[in-house]
Image 1 (cartoon, rainbow, N blue to C red):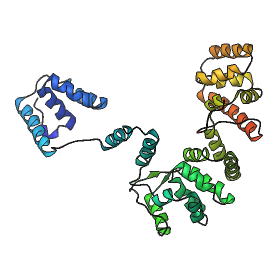
Image 2 (image 1 turned 120 degrees about the horizontal axis):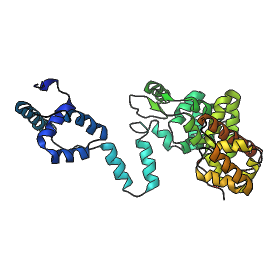
Image 3 (image 1 turned 60 degrees about the vertical axis):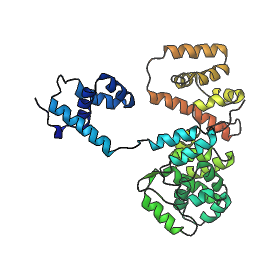
Image 4 (image 1 turned 90 degrees about the vertical axis):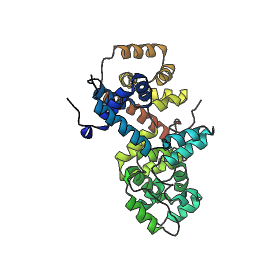
Length: 336
């Protein structure tokens, strides 16, 4: 049955072209393609047992024409930039530049603010609506935002951080309105699509770069407005795995308040690091019992494991608030 060349898909034409070019050439082409592209083209090739002469001529002719139309050099610009920056060897600088490039903006939005002294930014924004301040600061690097927050009025800080946590996407129209409202002080250019700027992860990144007393002050302020969001932020600030970095005395204080069955369940999916930390801070006999119980424990729901882990984290957070221990947390140095 003759194929209608005009109705064939690109993958099907590629399949017939490669059949004409032979196995060696096909092998070299497949090395450069993604797995799903190889599968797609191969699905057409596997059922072919004859390539009519006129069809062979058509696919080869189109290949030659395409080769002429698109003569030149094809590159993956993003990959090229990433590899070039990585090759410079300055890892801190590379990470900073790649973060800017991958942030989704053509040039950092509100770029002037990112280069201003934190105290000046706070002075500029302190009389703006908290939502406007949150949107602006959510576009900045976490360290810069954390520094700016320290100079904002105390009553404004928690409100702004809470609003950052509630942001998921912001339209270019909203950013444009902000830029127009602050046209004399700040500027910038944004792409015409949705931008990820805020959210809980952003808040966690900001808070881990601030002093502990300010972190707790801000979270307490958020809790008064939205206890659920405050708890989500707290849970993200310190994970169960982070407890492996706590000092032995602190770990012992936590474990005194944890029931064995809760501890066993919490360790079900845990990495060896946290298990070793816990075993090291309980008696040898207790460690043996928990290890045996873990081995005998059948399948359990992941949600139950996470709930057990979170209950232990809450104990740790409470003890920290009471001043009985210090939690390293995310982005902070390990205690020894």
